[in-house]
Structure formats: structure tokens, C-alpha cells
Amino acid sequence: MQKKILLVSFVLILIFFFVSSKSIVNVKIQELRFQLTKEQLLNFELSSKVLKEKIRQMRMDKDDYSKEIKMNILESNVMNAQLGSSNTELSSAEKFGLAIVNFVRIVSGKSRLTLEEDQKDMMKIQFTFYLERTRKFASAVKKYDELEKSISNKDSNEMGFVMLHNGFATAMTGDINLAISKLRKTEDSFSGNHFADNARILIAVLLEGNKKNLDIETKFSDSTEKANAYYELGQYKETLKELDKIENRTSDQNYLHARSLEEVGQTSKAISEYLTLVENKTVSQDVAKKANRRLLMIGSIYEKNKDLTDYSKSNAEKLGDKDVLEKIDEGSKLILDSLIVEKLSKSQSAGNDKEALKEFEELKKELEIIKVTEKEERKETTSKIEKEVAEIRKELATPKEEFDEPINLKMKILFNDGRELVGKELIFVGDKMKIVSGLFSSEIPQTQIREIGLNKNLKLKTPPIRIELKNNKIINAYFLKKEDDSFKIKLSNDEKNFEIEEIKAMRVLSK
Image (cartoon, rainbow, N blue to C red; front, side):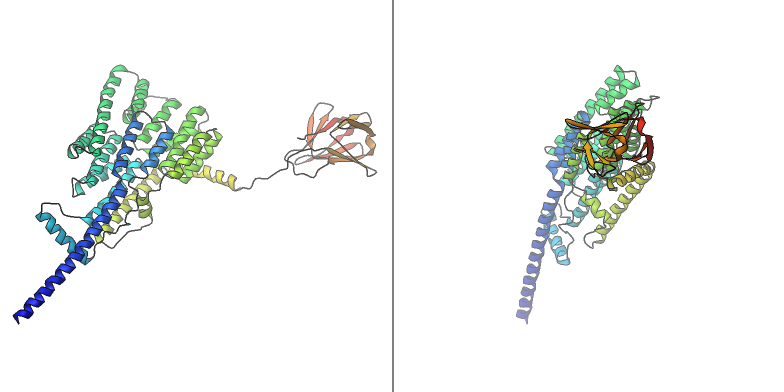
């Protein structure tokens, strides 16, 4: 009996170890898969490179469209992998294995694995970075603050990414002191890696900006000069303050106002002001071009808004700005669509985990609120653009009427007896008509003419027979038929009669 108990116990222990080892292996495979997905998604080094470029653009290259497009192409590769391709929803056996692994890790002084929680954090980080790159800075800061509290592993790369980008987004809202505080915290927490290096660079830029702000306040007293100086420095919040003090702003100042609104994330207001500049006929072509370029950048690069893109493309052609049109169009094709937005819009939730589904629905709701808010803010401008675009598309959809080229045309003169002659020029003198054809000419009585037409049956856009009257008036016609002592002349949309004695000469317009 004792042997049987020992044997059963031994078998149970073997089964336990077999199940445990299999569960642990599955958990480690899941961990490896998730780590690979995270590396692909976060692309930490690329995100740091992009942030450096953003800082550079904020200071020096704010109106360099080529660099701005290149930066957006790079940025679209950050936080934009196929989230959910590695499913971390664990089976019962895997949860058992995870419990064993975490027990061992805690005993050995390591932090426990939180695969399912990390998956939810990654989805939220991806969504928040989308808000940042589309310049919804206030919303991005709110989400980054929430993530800083919710991420369990405070030493992880995800935490470094969140803290660094939280500082940047805060700076872009104009709250410089709070941004510096957040970035100093990032520098202290991630000393020695690229998160700290970028935090240090951004802090230096912001401190230098604060110092130059004091110089500007001391050096200039006029709001116009201050606004220009602040704009060149990339201090958009201060630029707006000074421009708002100016009454009867010039079109250039209105452009700086719209541009500053765009940079601080108030895109809807910026679009409205750009539209006003584009449609105002008194604005210089240079300002209209710059405003339309920003509309094209917003529509084609940042938001993938087809109506706004088509509207600004049409304006670019009218303004003769085709070079920028080609650059932006080419760049737009290289920018990846936001997969998190696509997933939320299509309600493609992965897995059946209740917590994960709850997080997914919350993000989906936030995205819907953002869309509704933008729609309300842009109601007036959207209506205006939709009307313009409808007309543009109608014109494009209407097949253009094609005409023949008037090449080697001659007049064909038909006589009462059925004979025909061709000529390039007819000269009326007295009761006769001279027919000139190349080197030769001939005279015939006017009474012998029945009709004058063309030697080719072509569809022509404009009447090719030029009739010169003796009073120097010019008439263009397709066809002339003689009736007694007058000609019935077929015009574009009408017919008229002229006495033959009123006509001085006829010539054919030909290439």
C-alpha cells in the first residue's frame, strides 16, 4: 500500500513538473514574442532621432517643407507596428506557468512579469503618440500623465519613452517650466541612455529660449518686433500673445498668427485663418501661397484629410505652386497610416480579456470624442471646403470636349455650276473676288459664288474664317452661304447676314 502511494506521488510529481515546464516554456515564448513586438513598435532609437529633428525644426527649420516631410515619414514608423500580432492573452496553463515564473523572480529579487498588463500599456502608448504627432498636445499630455502613473515597471524603456515625450508635448503647449520639471525627472531616472540625452538637449533648448525671451522683452517695446522675434525663436505661445495686441494686423502677421496656432496644437483655428488668407483677393500671392502650403501639409501629411488636400491642391495649381505640390504629394505616399486609429475605427479588438476589451473601448470612445470635437470646431470651414471641393470634382468628372487642330486649313469656294476652288485668302474688289492660293491667284465674279466653307471636315473650338469688313470690324465664322447680294454667316451660336459690298477680305486661321 505504501509503495502504491509512493508510486502515485511520483507520477503526480512527474506530471506536475511536465505541466509546469511546458507552461513555463510557453510563457517564455510569449515573453520573447512580446519583447520583439515592443521593440518593433517602440523603435526607441528612431523615436529619439525623430525627437531631435523636431527640436531642430522648432528652432531653425520651421518653414523648411522638405525637412518637415522627411521628419513625418520617419515619425510614421515610430509606434506604428501591427499591435496585437503577438497575442498575449494567456491560457489557464500559461497563467499557471506565469505564476511559477513570477514566484521564482520575486524570490530572486527580480520584478515580476506583467505580459497582459504590458500589452494594454503598449496600446495606450501607441494611441497617445498618435495624439502627439497629429499635434493634439493637450490631449497627449493628459494621456502621458496617466501612463506615468499606470506603468508598473518604472525603469522600463516604455516609461522612458512616455516621460520624455510627455516633457516634449508639455513644452509644445507652452508650459515651459512644467516641461523642464518633467524633463529633469526623465534625465535623473534614465541617466546614461538616449532618453536622458534627449531630455538634456530639450532642457537646454527651453532654458535658452527662456533667456532669449528676457532679451526680447528688454530689447523690443513694439509688439510687431516682439512677435517676429518670438516666432523666429520658436516661442509660439509668446508670439500669439504679442500678435493679439496688434490691431489691424497685416496679412503677413495674420499668417504668423495662424502658423503659431498650428504649432501649439490649435489646428482647427489655424485652418480657419489659413482659409481666410487663401480666399482674400487683397492678400499678396506670396502670403496666399504660404497659407495654402500649410493647408496642404495639414490635409496631406498630418491628417490625411482628402477634402482639405484636394482643395489646397486646386489652389496650388491656381497659384502656380506646383513644385511644393509635387514634393508634398510624393511625401504623403511614404507616410504610413496610423494603425492604432485604423484598428479603433474598425473596432478590431484582439482577444477576450475583459480588462483589455475595457481599455480598447475607452480608447475608441476617446478617439470618437476627438473626432466629434474637431467636427464641431471646423463646422464652418468644413462646409466651405466641401462646397469648393464638390465644384472641383464636378469639373474633373465632366469630360472635356476635344477639338481638332486647325492644321493646313483652306477655304473651299463652291460655285453655282458645281466647280470648287480652294484658297487661303479672298479679296473683294468691286463686283469680283480674288482667290489667293499660294503663289497663284484668280479672279471670279461674285455672282458665281454659292457658298464658302472649309476644305476639311473638322471639329474646331473657334471659327477659323476671319472676315474683315470695310469699316475695319472683324467677324469670325465657320461657314458662309450666298443669298442674293448678301452672305448668311454661321457663327459659334448664331447666324447673321452681311451685304457682300460690306466685305473687304477673308482669311483662314490655320497652323
